[in-house]
Image (cartoon, rainbow, N blue to C red):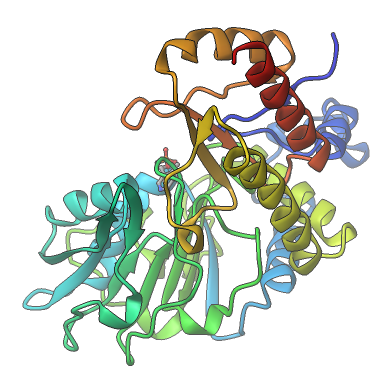
Length: 361
Ligand SMILES: *Cc1c(COP(=O)(O)O)cnc(C)c1O
């Protein structure tokens, strides 16, 4: 099979060296004669691997000591419930910033558990999509927390500065942006991310939570969603997604070998620039998001002539550029270019786009 570049938004491609290593170790992990996924999560050899993965993630993100790192089940959407269950006491309310479809879904779920103040920051100006500046967000100073989504995977909209919440804990759904560029974790109360975009296979969810926020969960919080229970049991209250945890550990090692988040951020910046430039310079492709809010991970683009969509998808697929169809609610195309996507993949896409435009103008 010739080389394929997979632009899927999630589950997304994983680094080729990681997949090769996993394959090599698949049947006999560290001389055990078993696969990682066949071993007890209580075995010494597994725990050592799990601890190393956590230590590597802490190093990659410079996570301060007063934060717990939890390896959970349930994906990003599991956290849509777990966050209010753990952090929103009765009688309080939480601010939910809406910048696209995932933050909207998070707010809708949170409403099941308490008082939610929805703040829609979308602003469309003369055909271009924009957001209200975070300085102008009408935040409630008594809120239990402020929830936002720094990178809206479906819409391709990114908030690239950390909002100031004046002491109110900031909660971020980083599912599609974690580890893609440096962030100051100390500015957050809680960060969560489903693994299947930038970390590993689906089934694993990372939660990074400041310790003082633990221990205030609703009485009815299921044990497997209770952060305190997870923290007290080193994320092994019940059987964790063991194989996903192992693969995440391999991804962390790979990223460290590349020079860490600082280095991959440069590559991500170059990849995004290359693709946006190709879109902006063309007569056929369009991205209408205001420059400062354009995502570096998920880049949607639309063909000015809609009738060419099907042909574009068919021919790009045949050229080994897969999963470029945009999300059904926004249409058009979307190239997801997470950490694992090499710059060669973006170059191949840009070459294809230019060649397709020539043939169809
Ligand atoms: C993919 C995604 C989710 C949902 O993740 P699941 O693991 O499918 O629940 C939530 N938030 C964002 C920003 C995402 O990109």
